Amino acid sequence: MGGKESRGLRWLLWIVILVVVFLFSLIAGSVWINPFHINPESVDILINLRLPRAFMAFLVGGMLALSGTLYQQLLRNPLADGFTTGAASCCALGAVLAISLGLPALAVGLFALVFGMVGFWLVYLLSMRGSYVEPVTMILAGIVLNIVASSFISFMKFLNEESVLSVVFWLMGSLEFVGWGKVLIELAIFVLSLLVVLRYSYALDVMALDDVSAFSTGVNVNFLRKYLFFWATLLVAFSVAFTGVIAFVGLIVPHAVRALVGARSRNVLVFSALGGGTLLMVADAVSRSLLVGGGEMPVGVITSLTGGGFFLYLLFRRKKEVWYV
Image (cartoon, rainbow, N blue to C red):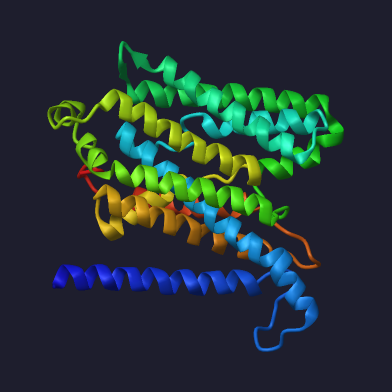
């Protein structure tokens, strides 16, 4: 009973936190809404601005955290996520190219998606050793691709000075331009991806040990790693395509979740998705509340500051045992 009661209490706590944060994200902003005094203007702000934005923050945060969990599990590397593997930077490169060409918002998202998928598979091919993926080589290839993509982005900003402000704001991540159509697309990707990866949670537990152990239990390691890499990259690509570059969510949330719920993959995947969504809702609410006069700070700035502080904490409190055991 103790285990069941503990799980039930854990779920109850997460639900309470999630509801409180969601309500806070609805009332917070450049215009604070009094929940006890709702007028027609407040209703319009809630339905057309705050609600889709809160849902998008939860979905994008959950997708980034879920992808980071997958990358870290598959590569057995605590620093792996969509940014260190190069996928996010390639998404950014595609989006910046579309913005520089003056293409519409739909094309910006499409370019980001295509470039992200192509970039990651390029990293994947570079890290192959026969039929085996070398995790360290993949991280190094991702870092190289980040540098190359950043160089091209800087070059395009230099050539297109009139679009520099739009590019810079997009690169820092923003949830300002969100509609219900984008929310529905992200919801479909989020739910489908979560269902797919949960199906392989036991295989991920075995693969966390080593490939030989996974092979001995009947897990097709090569296929499963490629398959789940695809889903992890898809999550990053759709996130970056709609909201820009929001760093550190996929890197810090899995670490925090493992410290709270243990290393079992099913628990880590589910609670990382919930934790990432919660974190980004808080960050978004803070980003639109700090500046006076209706201004808004890019949410990526808030997550970067949070991530930097979190890793400073880990640096001083790190333990010697292996993180994924």
